Length: 403
Ligand code: AMP
Ligand code: MG
Image (cartoon, rainbow, N blue to C red):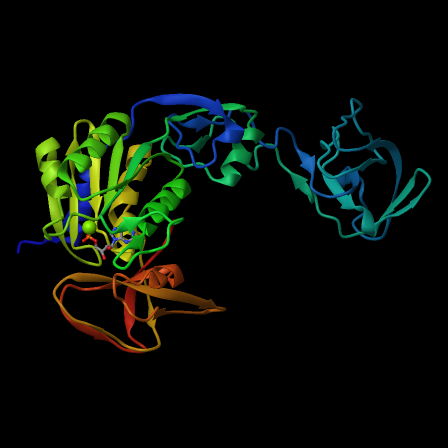
């Protein structure tokens, strides 16, 4: 059987998708996880003015004696939020609080812990440095500098930065809409006791959970029986109403694996067998304008193929620039892995970090029906196409799991 190498499957998956063209302008405070459709340029300096990073006294450095104490007179009090209009003259100082603008004439902040104060009299010890404890205007972001490029997926600190630039609304790509379908006569929803041969629909829940984490709109089309007409109706509806149709199950070569047939009739299949484990049977294609990802039925395969192929493609559709797969090499420890077969394998692993030491171990049994392996894992261990034994102390390539 002709299997497509994993690297080619990933390339083709990314090549097949493009960013959603439609944009919308939304409040910055609602934009977490959204993707910028326009670059953001700083309209002004942040901070906007030189200010003090400490509570203390603003002084003129030239007034301070090179050795011994200096006596100064406190002429004003400056809490954060206030400003002084007067220029500070020789021998004068200003009581100042963190964040307050540096008064004209001053160029040094002396922290309150080292001075002596008696009424308006201030004694400053030697050893101060010019410009100490001053945050310069534009130190964080300079006027006209590029703050974010288009395609930036906004993180919590990004939301804070946009607000510090005075922005209340921002233009982002519209949300990706994804239709989710489970297939299988044996698959049921929790709420009814399991009859022999039945399984609860964990795939639709885990697919919806990963989609929630990505921040896309979900169209839940439920569980569809292994009947061509029913599958076709669900996929047609998904393709009409969503940008992406995501199914699980029914893409293998069993008698009831009808999804691939239906896609060939409704749309087109780009490829459907990948040299990877878990996740050999997959169907990637198109129905009308919608991108179709037919994931395998096994619960582990669903998540692994989602992370390795579907998620990167969805991020591109959401407007993010395509990224190479993040991976690192690290020491393997624990019970050896004996990898057989000729498919690239993504074994579930647990990355440990302990001080300067970091290593990975296997989660144990790698059967693709064992969802606990995926639940325990925080990384995938990449094993080459050819058989290999990985022993304690060997170096392996791993892909950290990011949901
Ligand atoms: P399939 O690819 O449809 O032959 O399914 C492969 C295996 O995954 C079978 O053991 C199915 O029972 C199981 N499976 C399929 N769909 C689901 C689902 N939605 N939730 C949990 N297990 C499933
Ligand atoms: Mg099935």
